[in-house]
Length: 364
Image (cartoon, rainbow, N blue to C red; front, side, top):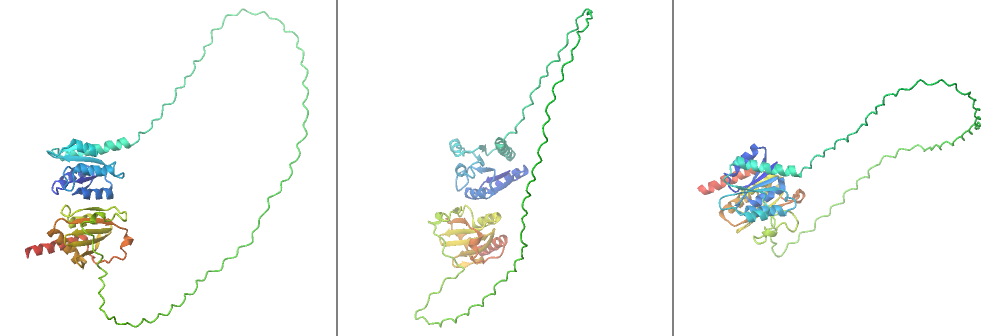
């Protein structure tokens, strides 16, 4: 059984996750509703355990989104509410399966969740067919012969003379059957011997065409503007147009606001999932881009820079400002064949260097 725990409190969620793991449940933790929808699409959990207050939306709103998707409408949903957070009408309309108060112990919560999922599995499992017993065969009772009646001694009477019956006539003898005509044997087909095909000879490669000499360079009277660097892609979309990113290609994306999730958390989540795509970020100072291939960061762009320097500057800028947005667009690996690879180090080492650089800047 797989469970998805949605809780924005980083100190409270590991305690309940440890209790679920002790009961044999495979647990994943999501710090927000937006992140939970993405993890549910990747891992297809059996039950969602959510808090009533999630930061980016309410727990019953998350349940309504899960119920509206045909691929996730059968997932069980458990809502944990605190004092003053209980809204029976909203939870019933959203389709919450189980409502638990925050005062219950973790052991009780785990027991109730396991019972809910197992009860659903028992209801969906067809009952085994029971073969009917064989019909009983009734044996009729054995008739009992009545006792013999006493018979008086009979008188001996001589039998009349027997006249022999005439012998029956002998049947006529049928003539012997005619011999069968010999059947014509099937024709024997003969085929001429097959000659082996001559070996195929590859055609000789044509000689390469002569390379023409380049035309003479004619100096231009006006200076030519320098072309942009091939490593820097087109500018990221504006903050107002970020909501439409990915809808033209039909790709399923997830997006949200920076501050609810930091760039470091997004990078770790995408790396754990082993996803391939582009993480587009929009700040008040401009747009940025981080490219992932099978969970590894291979390229970053921000403020005219590329590589690790652009990634570090993008993380630092997101901490200085608030109100930015992000959007992750999954793509096929073939679409990144022409994408430059400016980052070769792993995600953990990359994040450690960024954190150390930010600490040094704060101390200075």
